[in-house]
Amino acid sequence: MDTMGKVLFALLAIVMLVGCFLMGMLPASAVSGGASSVLGFGLLTGGIMAGFTAWIAWMIADMETRRPALVATICGAIAFATTMWLPADTIINGKQYAAYARHITPIVRTYVIDNFNAIDTDGTGVITDEEMDAALSNLTLTQEQRQALEFMRSNQHEAGHVIGSYTTTTYVWISTGPNGQGYMSPVITTHYIYGVSRGDLENYPERTIAKWQKW
Image (tube, rainbow, N blue to C red; front, side, top):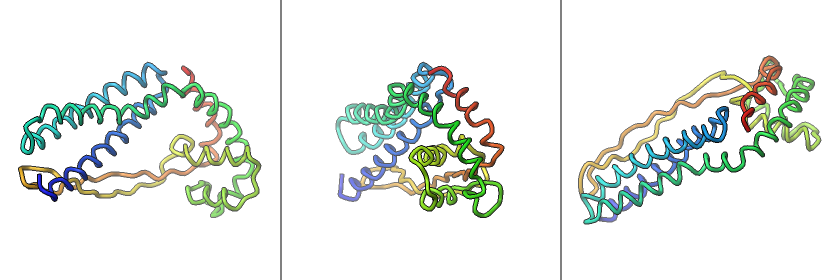
């Protein structure tokens, strides 16, 4: 494998690892069914990503090395471990996460509703990501209030609702032959923008309790 081929292989490996890690976020967030749900979904997702990665590694290695099976097995194992990283963390620490979420969400509701106008500086009735950042930087907060705002900031996809979206395009190298032959394939990703209203906050603790009820 020439230098260009090695660089392209390394870039593809990085993309695959990032993809595996991001895919692991799906089962890691499936907490409403309890630890068994996270484990089952995680194993399924990990198996799919491991198989897909192993297949790509086999195709590349079959053109470049004499041991495609070994390369495919190693790459598949790494992909599986990367995909399972977040689900495993959720399974191990899920009870702790659940206890903290049940504790902090009532504080989020009380503090943010009581100080909604101070945080919602443009008066639209929806607190945006930028306004949460500004509140954390500019308002005088107790440690508990800061923790509440930081929690809402990190979990705004659950605390609030979608208020917009945008797309980004990245390019992935698809190898089609030896000596670095291939092409760049576009991958379009949709990103959602969230905001939090008073109505969202009213039942936020109840939604959190329901989500973590099996932990």
